[in-house]
Length: 212
Image 1 (cartoon, helix red, strand yellow):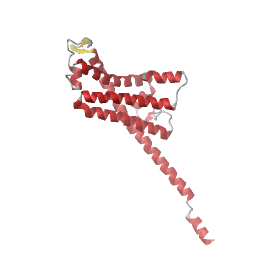
Image 2: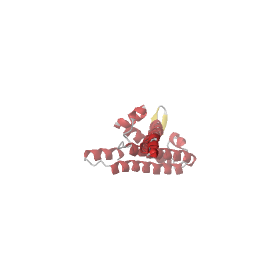
Image 3: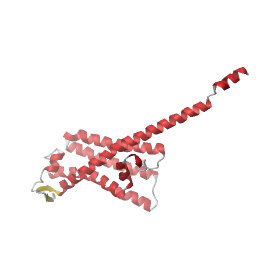
Image 4: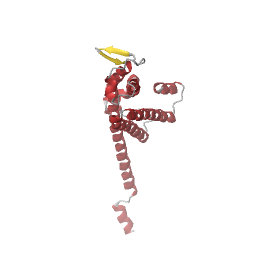
């Protein structure tokens, strides 16, 4: 749905600022709710899930603020010359789709395998590595290179490096947007100083006024 909504809005001429905001808010809320659930399922890694939620929200919030301040029009319209990872992430729709989808699939698969093991395993790495029980009919076991795991575990392992890349991009986005905001602040302050200087009378004008 996240991949289709923007395409549908552009196709039928229904793109809007509200839609752009709703798109990002929906993504952040859905991911945060899933991560909160995983923090409960895997309590030993609750802090890690909390930090990932914080990074996801902060990076996009700062980016949206920088977008508003700089007038870019969309949080995806940024200065892509700063980093090659951001360039491919935001200019290639297939890359953007696959990276975002893989990140969500990883968390979804962790949710699924928790129930596959009968809630007996509370370590995410162990949940991804332990062969499925024989009595689980929906595990869909698959053997690759002599290792037998469920198809859901294989999907999780395949998505893990892509998810790491996605969170790395979030860090880069946070730093890049923070830099943009800092630059905007400096430009505003310089403009304010020039404005104040133009309104203040010069020493020569003060002396002339005193003579009169």
